[in-house]
Image 1 (cartoon, rainbow, N blue to C red):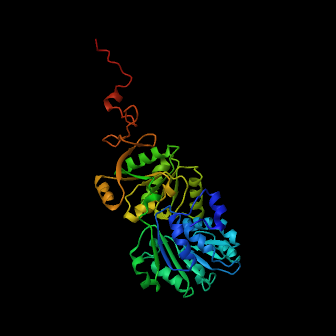
Image 2 (spheres, rainbow, N blue to C red):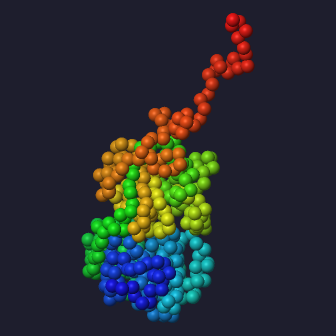
Image 3 (cartoon, one colour):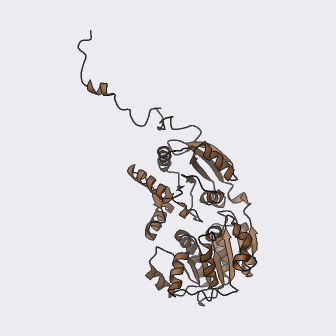
Length: 405
């Protein structure tokens, strides 16, 4: 299928030459009003895949018609930013509703009657309870990152939200990884869904290489992160399994005056926005985060992902890895752990894992850069910290043995 005429200038400006496979596969079924479950690898263009046909269904100045649900503030803002220039082509408006943002300002913008809302569940539910947002005229609901949005903690909230829309609302779900619930969609949503599954298409992730670094204590891991941060060509995201571990490393990095930013769900909306801007604009080249940033975040030129802590499962590994090597670009993923972790990781994921090291220039190396005592080995093969003098030597400092003949 050729690029729709409405979007040809946009594609040209962004140097996109053709539709991706998922964009091609989704376009007509979506436009025809079919209920969909669409799965494709990270970086394959799923956002544009649902935005293009969705915009062509809108009636300008006819109130709220589309709701897009996202799992995080960052992703909601990112999707809004993708939609905005395209929505202008059809004379429509889009608004993001996220927690952490100023609610008064959001209410003021709602008076402009946007045709599209991109929202996180928490803030959307608040505004619905306050009767500031009504879903009675929604034509299309898009659930992005559906494997996450339909997990045990969010499923009932998603169903409750959709239940307040018209019975014939078009339901579409997009994801990079699967979820057992995708096999039971009729049970949960009362409809039959067309399933488009392109997860086995590896062309979008072919440029990603996967490595394992033998680093099983904080001293070694943090030393490696500092080396990476000093490499000017490095732009990487470091993932932690929980906030406690993240903040422990933040404290260590601050002590050593390492140049980095952090992203955590406990930060304010403005703090998170500032951190992402600094990283996206390459003012810093190291971003430390929990998995809040793993879902769908698209930051240009990220060339390395570091799993400071082992991912819980293959889906988590896929989403973290998907922040690099997007749309066929090259990228590296390294995971810290011990030999037992490496075996578990190889059993967990479907890619080849190579053991590697990180040298003092922040580059991948075939040789270890830490000795058996976990001390950095520099180019002169001397320990980075000078050994303390023996007590006897300190006592005799400045004295001469005059009895020596």
